[in-house]
Length: 403
Image (cartoon, helix red, strand yellow):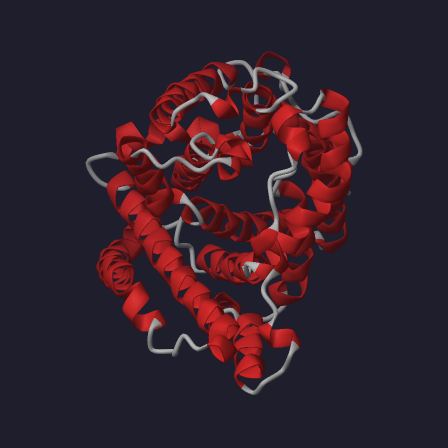
């Protein structure tokens, strides 16, 4: 069943390059946050110099939380495309997709040994939650459920419980008090790896749960699945008006929330008894700002892509086709640059240097992707992922050897 599909010559049609370019943009956003964050070590000694702080603030305001959200949205779109293409061939891909996610989970677990901030295993686990929704016929129902999860229902449950005096709901979130392990700052390689496997791995899942990221991933993936169903990327001309209207609404919401976040949060009194409900309410408001700006970035990018900026933005498409490879490679290269067992530059690199190096490094990754796809159908890890999914090595790799 799967081997026949796997051995088929890949098809990358121009109409879907918009999704590839968007995925490349999301990868850029994620990386350009990781660089001034020094792959998480920034939080051991945040900068206070105003000249450097502005670099950090601008990057984090524009991309932190938004690039990750955009990646989750693209994940949902890709889920639908994979399932739908198999269905068009009369194949129920459910079992194969579960195995595909299992392979991604294994890749993510291996990557997490190197860098605790890995998101691949989180996407793999949350991807399982999408499968039941694929059989739901109504796009409206799926979209409503997606929005429900984006509104952070678990946070609201804790807010309401806290206001009603529940002790558990008035306890501070555990990840707030977490510190960067000394092993990352000055430890050796073996100590760092051991920390990643134990405390680092547990902390990542704690953060994903307490910060609401898990709920957000599910919500955005469901919205992405709906976008895939309605042909948002497949038939871009049909949605030109929707993109522009959505962009205006998203920008107004993002700007409004940015300047009113504190005043909105202040609607909930800052008494000692209401400390956690108020903070969680602030987190919900901040999450809505992130989602609004993410929507503006996505709709703005796609509007430009399908107009005068198409040629310039399409440069990102090859990077979007090998996001898995480039995402892992970024940490393989830069974690040793910042961590104690390597160059230890977390203590000396400024925010401006980190951002400029990140821009240059990503430009090099894009150039590499363009060169790579002149000779190969897939990125290295993308090929491995597909071959493992179908349990065959007959997946075309080099273009010269493709039938």
